[in-house]
Amino acid sequence: RVALVTLAHQAGAPGLYGGTFAPDAAGIWRLSIRHDDYGLEATQQFEVEVGGAGYTGGTLTDVTAVRLYMGARSLVYTDDQVQAALDAACAMVETYCNRTFAADDYTHTLDGRGTDMLWLPQYPINDVTTLTIDDEEIDAADYTVEDQSIYYEDGFTLGRRNVVVEYNAGYTTMPADLHHAVTALTADLLGTSGRDTTLQSERLGDYQYTTAGGAANPAAGLLSPYASSIAKYRRMVL
Image 1 (tube, rainbow, N blue to C red):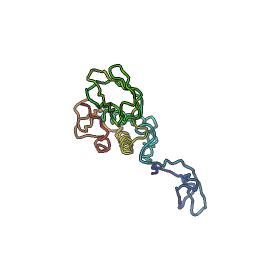
Image 2: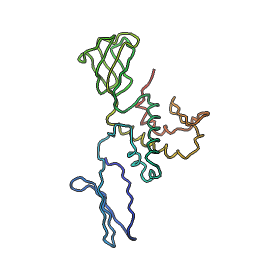
Image 3: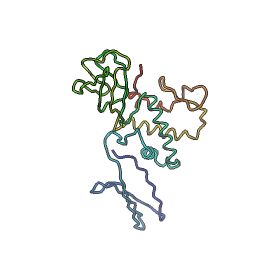
């Protein structure tokens, strides 16, 4: 997979230009532009991301990814403007999903339910450092860490805030569909930055985000086009 690259070349002479953009024998991508009449040629070397199905930036998206997605449309915005829209898009998606996505360390104090399964607020779970039940640390060999939960055969005793878990959770490689959705949402927010914000808000399911005071408009929905991509990452809060 090759990231979208938008290129512009200022002509030095009138006439017909031809060009190629391809990797050389060493795998380095090069842009070559040639003028058919004058024999003028310029070559520029590029680093192009070639990878798998995920985004490895450690965050939902970044300024570079948004600019690549938008192409020439992004040139009218400063990096600070793109970052502000990006931060808003990430906040909207994480608020809707009731979770954060980038890998981080957490300490959570939870209620024991009297069952053998404990569901953690953040996931996917990468590692559990310590598990303490009723002030007793449980040996790591005695429990099993799953994608969203911990299985402990002896059970998490019923109690109020009697289970403490120190763990790392979140994505180091963002799922491609989630990354694309937030990148596209950021572009949408930049595109609406000059519009009348009295258009109010958006709604997706029971989630609502209001951009200005007043009654919400159920028909509006910047998140709605990306529902199929982000809804499956939502953590249901009971």
